[in-house]
Image (cartoon, rainbow, N blue to C red; front, side, top):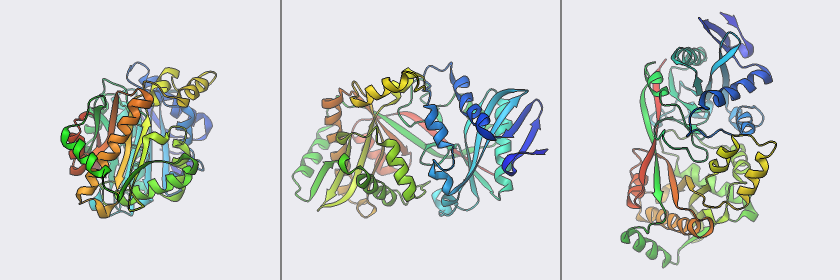
Length: 395
């Protein structure tokens, strides 16, 4: 065993060598291996390389302000054949264990492997790194924060993911479960045909809310983008505080996410619901930028940037994704919570059809045991089209 950079170890498991990522060359190789291993999958959407690099760079991604992270590469000889990230989120381990995280819980993610031998070696090294850091349990895969791309795709491999969603090769499920990982939590994504009207009951609930003078559902104001982003993410922190897997979003992460999402945000696709003038709920919907990103194969230059920028100016025939919505905790047990949700969904549905010629939407992720959100998804006629599993294992 030879000590590598940052105190991590290089471990040789013949004929696979696992080494910590050190320097720009290794980081580039860490990013590139995903492109090679997924190139033959027609459903895979190549990420923007610049975004992946930013995600993995301390000083740019504020996740590093409260997390220890180590990236590893697998090689056979000089050829890179896999990668994995191992991380400890100190905000996550401070959470109550009954909420999924808690003391002693580390994570790994971003797994890509040429074959099972490589996958086994990478997982073993990630586990060893976590164990040396005092962790006693793993929740995985998380790439890297719970707010980024949680879980492994186990259903829905036949179609491309929408913006900011993960996509993984089918055989990874057997490889991970073969290493002793058991299901911890199932995350669901729902597909919705927005060209169809909602059932009469939902229409009546929306109409009733529109007559209530105390309720106002408004578009987000992009002229005050930073303030609106702060309002949304503070509602989110309150609304999701008791959810499984919840980790608070820091102020620097609020600013980072706001900057990252700004090119995608449309005033007519993000709604804030107010009750007697107080913001109490929100629904964030994003046009599916994976449509143009897939076409440029993750390359912004020389012409990809122009194509992406042109599409972002006015998305057409755009599917949309609802990655986040929430109602403040004090209202969650009331009928008003579902009424506000139905109103926001209906308003955004109308805007998507009228302004973007949209025909479908995806809602998710939703925890499979989140009865309120599952009931809302069922009530509007959406159907599960993708499933992601977060696994756990004692160390």
